[in-house]
Length: 216
Image (cartoon, rainbow, N blue to C red; front, side):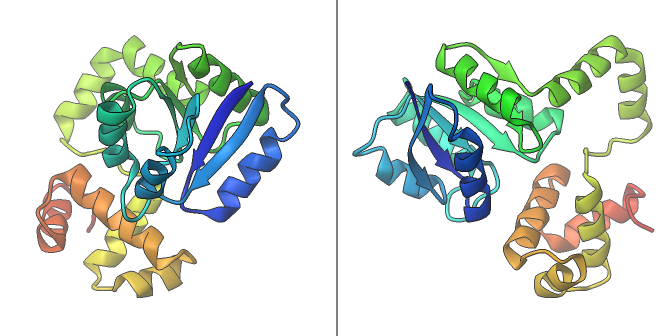
């Protein structure tokens, strides 16, 4: 029996995962947490085989959580479960100690396979992410050309939408209303934009975006 802890700030996601894995007899959900800090508190009394960890969370996100897990619980295996499919994130979390990377769009079979693979001390990368990595590996010239033509970070469609609204002067709450998202989600997008573009703050983020032609 593989003992698993779910870590995601959305109750709907955790409930969905529990429902999805309910019929799998070899996997047991023994705990859940809304953020990294709750997970660390839980680990004082609970010992899992695998931690399914989201990256975008309040209080303590997945990246910071990985650092603590590497220091305090190196034997525990971590499977990242996220919507972020950028290559840079895959490399970042794997270098931080995560053994697996699976997207939230994955089906039940892939999810179960990912958990079992990681539990057996093997690496796992979501098929969708793996295909993108292979495409880049098989076309290094094209990747180099793209990188050389414009030194832009990889921004998702939603991040571009948020960036344009930020540039137009909308607040997080107003952007959330326009995009039918929570304010916390928009705050996460804003932070990721700053991290990806290496901007110091919102003002330099907008300046960077205009200079690089990301927005008009």
